[in-house]
Length: 316
Ligand SMILES: Cc1cc2nc3c(=O)[nH]c(=O)nc-3n(C[C@H](O)[C@H](O)[C@H](O)COP(=O)(O)OP(=O)(O)OC[C@H]3O[C@@H](n4cnc5c(N)ncnc54)[C@H](O)[C@@H]3O)c2cc1C
Image (cartoon, rainbow, N blue to C red; front, side, top):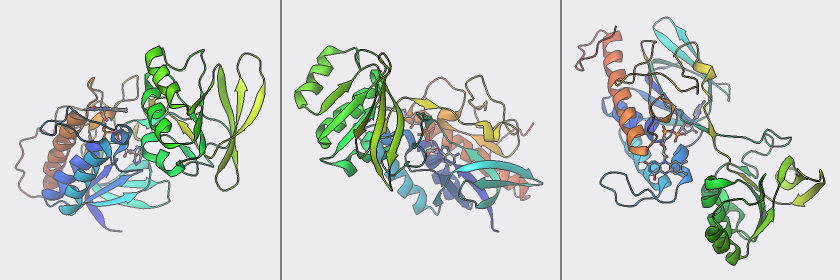
């Protein structure tokens, strides 16, 4: 098994920026990520990224990915579920059953979309169950689908589904999906939404792909099956950092405590982006944190290899 200088966990803007910098410093760099873009995939327009007046989130991610690959970073799609310290190196294990060895690790795994936790959800992930309408709605052009989302989180998926699918069943727990009547009138005018108030999905059914959802009325208790070829679930994010709990300190929200250099309590383990206990969750901040973590990782790797360390870092 090859030993990488740096393995970056996460392919959002923090992880990709870290990979770009690490690879450009000529470190043997690997990104392990469930996807490229992370939360950037959820947004059609970013207007506050310095020097870029307007860009879609996926396009911003794609550009940084290309830059990182251009400097030699490798990227594989998988999910890390264990990180262990083995002497001078870290061993990273994945859900896919692979193992990777690295001198330094950059944790940039951000936030993970919240799941419904109902029967069929895991089975049909990527086979009709999606947590990103903006990413996946085009696959269901002209079809009947379902949306589980409410409040501000529901704005973007409602707009996107209205422009792509034949119709969408909008499932939410209250009387109205969003408390903005003007917005709802605009969506209603597009004629694609069928409201299912006071309701919840209790099961997702299908064969190789989603075919229907089972919905329960929370008031009457009535249960009905609705044909749908996809379910879009956009109900927020959670932090899933338990698998690194033995290596880093976490705050009450499960975010990683790291300093300005991206260092955690374990030498060689760095953290960047939305996963860090820092109040401002923004793309440019995640990118900058990724850069800081990569530069610190570079210094750490040099030190472990007995090379001169250029960056002035206090290793405690
Ligand atoms: C709807 C929306 C709109 C936004 N609009 C703006 C905006 O206009 N301007 C702005 O600056 N910011 C905006 N943000 C915030 C910005 O998108 C985030 O701050 C930023 O993308 C976070 O990047 P990240 O790399 O830290 O984490 P994430 O984007 O969350 O990326 C995490 C990455 O880690 C991967 N991952 C997770 N767990 C694992 C694991 N165990 N193993 C491997 N990979 C894993 C994920 O698949 C993903 O690739 C918006 C966010 C959202 C949701």
